[in-house]
Image 1 (cartoon, rainbow, N blue to C red):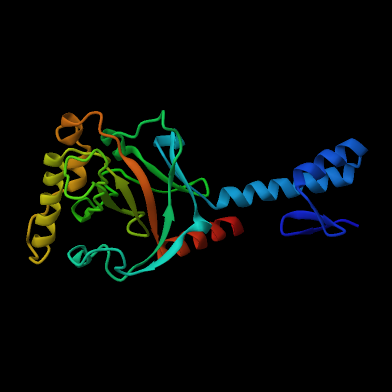
Image 2: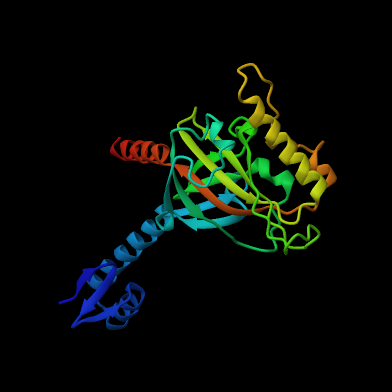
Length: 257
């Protein structure tokens, strides 16, 4: 008899995909096997959906980037973040689950003005958004991985990595999105770096007024006006591990109710 193991059908050490099993069951008219295989395919789809990470526009469209939650890596505390950024309260005492993102369609451009309308979806459910009231604009940091050739600052291949922190659900769902502002000209890039450096210096003072760097990036009065064709590439997303545990707990409670 056939048995199910590891999501595939086995007979005499041979492995058959559920899709092929369904076709075979239909060919021989085996109704019971057809129903069994359809259930297995449905479970397979649900499992794949639950592990999917997507960055989309409002309402789920368009899909800008995708990743797989299970392919992520654990990162503790300040690993990968420079000393100046580690003074921020957002990054303190947290551990992260880093998920690599792949851009979906080169024909769908993600421009600066679109950054304020992103939705982070985990298993199809909105985990957080990049609306102004969820992004911690004064905690934006630079990951300045310059890919230019030698000391040639005019090289066409320059990586301009920015990390955007998000605090959603009253601080219950924390995340960071890493964005590469590819080939951004040097003057606006220096302006962003100066604003971030100012915030990091001001963080030493309790009453220091901080700059909303994210607003500079998305406001029609700022960079999008000067650089309307500037493309942003979504590189990765990091989930606060405690936030994910809380969200999964809530989902389990909803299913019970």
